[in-house]
Amino acid sequence: MRILVIEDERKVASFIQRGLEEERYIVETAPDGEAGLELALNNHFDAIVLDVMLPKLDGYSVLSTIRDSGNTTPVLMLTARGTTEDRVQGLDLGADDYLPKPFHFEELAARLRSILRRSAPEKSTKLHCGDLVLDMVTHFAFRNDKEIELTTKEYALLEYLMRNKDRILSRSMIMQHVWKHNFDPESNIIDVYIKRLRSKVERPDGPTLIHSVRGVGYRMRDTPMPEDGDGDTDES
Image 1 (cartoon, helix red, strand yellow):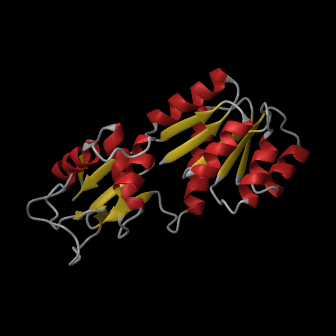
Image 2 (cartoon, rainbow, N blue to C red; image 1 turned 30 degrees about the vertical axis):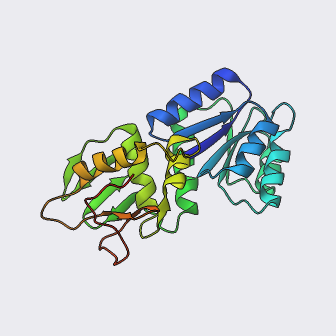
Image 3 (spheres, rainbow, N blue to C red; image 1 turned 180 degrees about the vertical axis):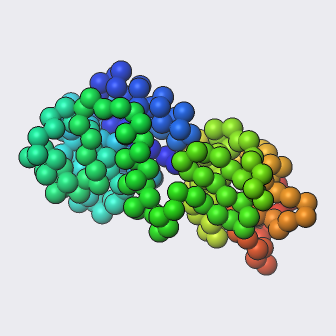
């Protein structure tokens, strides 16, 4: 999942980024309110961690503008001012949760998982596609109860595919969400990682789960569709 952290204290931002990346999130950071707002309005994120006291544009103004634009991305606010009035103001502006500083990373991660579950159609901490299961708390994948070892990027790609099961995902969507930068039509990095994933999650005696959609991208589903490409064929 892709998380935006808007935090001006460099050490705090680095601490959050390292921790979330260890939890296998894809993380982008912004050092002030204006930069954070621009990223939030022009990119897709699954959640935003937003500090209140920011240079150029404070967190309340950032949150208000995000919500006024119709953006419903879950927002976890951070503040060194933990008064009731501060929490009420943030929640009334559309924050999903509030965490006062200083905080333990374990609590931040748990609150983030909670608001992500609340915003998801299914509230479970596990994603399913056929007999493939992805546990978003432990970050383990299983198929037929057998654990599958994944790298950080493989996990991020598989989670994105499974969260959007039955939906066609273009290469540009996958590139931006998993690799944090714009799609290079000359690059075959997505196809390389899809091939690696297939080698780990597909079974010779089981149904194909990751399907190529020729000229577009990929779709994860339990059964193939007539317009899909062959499940075991990578296209560049």
